[in-house]
Structure formats: C-alpha cells, structure tokens
Image 1 (cartoon, rainbow, N blue to C red):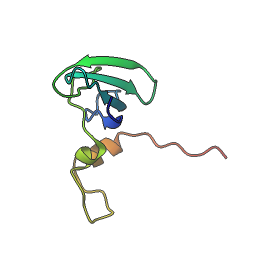
Image 2: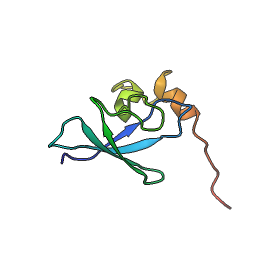
Image 3: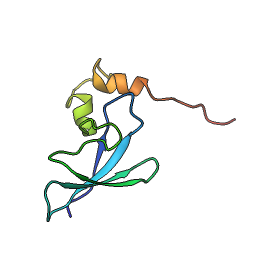
Image 4: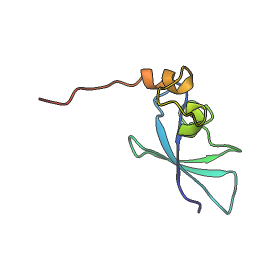
Length: 93
C-alpha cells in the first residue's frame, strides 16, 4: 500500500469532512477511505477518490486552497468558503 494521504470533501453541504486515503496497489482503482472524524471505513472502487457520502471528487488541502501563494491572507475562493462553514468554539473558562 502507498502512504496514506489526507483529502477533503469540498461540498459544503456534505458532512464528509477530512478523509485519510490509501490506494490499494494490487487494484489501482480501489481506494481505502477512513473518515478522520468518526473513523468510519469505506472501500471504494473508482477512477479517482470521491466522497462516499455525497459523490463529490475529494481534493487535497492544497487543491482546495487553490495552490501555493506568497500571501498569508486567505484569498477569496473554495478554501475561504469552506473555512467559513466551520464552527469555531471558545475554550471553556
């Protein structure tokens, strides 16, 4: 097996979140997906990794952000839209 990689579901309406993927060497169109939140395990037969919950193509964090940038400010785009859907909680006092 190859080294596991982290992928994200870019669909803001999906609760898929972050996935840890491994492409199985013996069958190149077979993916092992583990959800980083609830640890659910999925075995997926597809040409590319897709979210098993909504069917959207999964992307790496870099792809979601739109590539490397010299700016430290998050630019308008898919990553900013996704970040705005997250719920931030205050630490307990």
